[in-house]
Image (cartoon, rainbow, N blue to C red; front, side):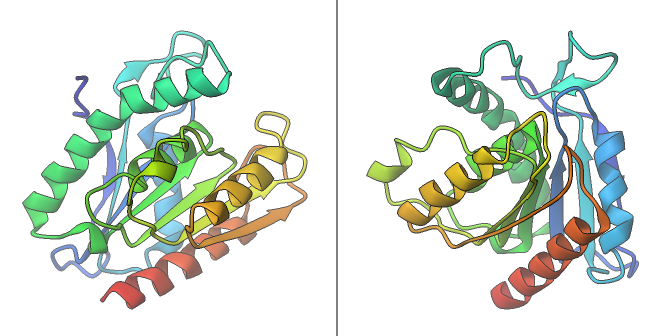
Length: 219
């Protein structure tokens, strides 16, 4: 198993020990250094949160110096499912390590992803031993759900935000994910607006409000 040993982080603005952990999972060819840029927008509303933005364990061979959770050489459902499954153990190990380090539980953890990171946030967040506080996914898709239908699995609240003009991950992926999550009994909120493959201020505000409410509900 590849181990996550690097990335970017932002300590709680309150200066106190973390009461929550928000794990930020970047997209294909990006890095934790890029993804940590979301954190300053949320610190005022979540002053006791530790933001962790790891680099994926694999260097990206296709797009510059960035990282990948797995090689996106195939886009069939089976290839995406296998890729997400292969990357999940490294993220789970990081989560286990950080929850133990700070004396927290899944109820104090939220997963936030962008694009390929959204695939990972959903894959990992729906398979933890206990429900995480929330999953927020931007411009991504849902992979590998058939096995979930046959198991009793955690059903944390999910927010999915997607641009209707996304040329990388089509908006159809949002509708597919929403339908599948609802079928599985996962509470899901979706929002789409005229945006390409990115996150805008409206999406950031939606994510912030969703996280604040989710942590309040779990406390």
